[in-house]
Image (cartoon, rainbow, N blue to C red; front, side):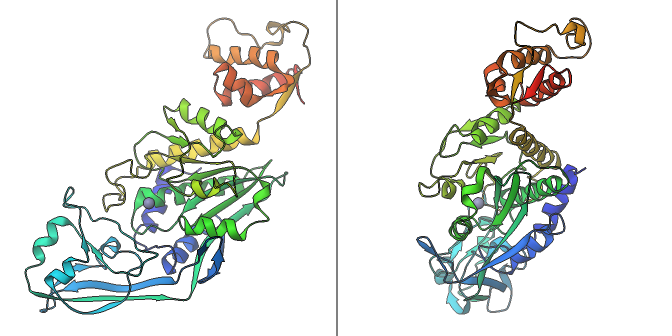
Length: 421
Ligand code: ZN
């Protein structure tokens, strides 16, 4: 049984690694995930055309700092990997104070936080610092050294396929391209890894595919190189930003009312979460929603992109993500899987008026710990089980929790009042 602490421990282990959209940090991350679930690493060479994009050069960094002429370091990548803008080109030289400050980002409104910045598609270099540390620039000149490489290599993603009785697939996608940021992206990476492990140990109706890939360029590359898989995807979820204290937010797929949308809206609403309509901005759900791809893939988060003050700063750290929140996110994903796996249609075997439930021990009129909802679920199931209504349809119409409808159906099957269509 996975605990929130297990998930948080994995987040903690992955936190120091410097990830980006390519490079050894992603590989190291995926190799650690392999200890949880046996994913395969896939490499796509730099320069590979993927739809309207091209796989970029591979970036790796060994060290980076700004120092005074006396050697005193003002800012050092070794202290925090957010200090270097991701994909900064190599630099080795002496610059005036003004020249250097033109390459420094800070957050004046949060002077003790380091911002997270990237420049993937335009060759540039920059450092990111605590605004409060700008006072360290008290010399006229500085030595800047970025010992990095930006060369033809490859972009890495991880994939795990778990076959089920059906060939039809459920897809989970989480991005892996952010460095030391805990909620965005380590929470999603860790929770889906533990979901994969749990699914490996169960009987599966559907087949499941987990993809851990860089944001945007990674989902585009995956979609461009996995044409054979796409027609099999019946349901999908981008599962990211799941560890903060915000309520769950489900963002609908391109279709708005696909089964995954209906299931997730219900599961999330039962936990006080909210539903967001689709918009073509956010995370990788927008690639799955493009008109040429058009897959039923929604997005599950807690606080989404830009939705919490610590977003894309050093304050998105190991204290922002809570073990109990990670555990609840895993639970929610498992509820969604349960609903996807068991969205059956039944027929009532005693359809002429209500069958007498009391004599079968199914109707308990007084006391006990049974929820009235459960009694009501029996009546709804008997009424709507004409072969045309699924459990999801019945849950939606009655307003009763999917899990209760499902277990009430099992009870009626055991009493030989319902049969699967
Ligand atoms: Zn992000």
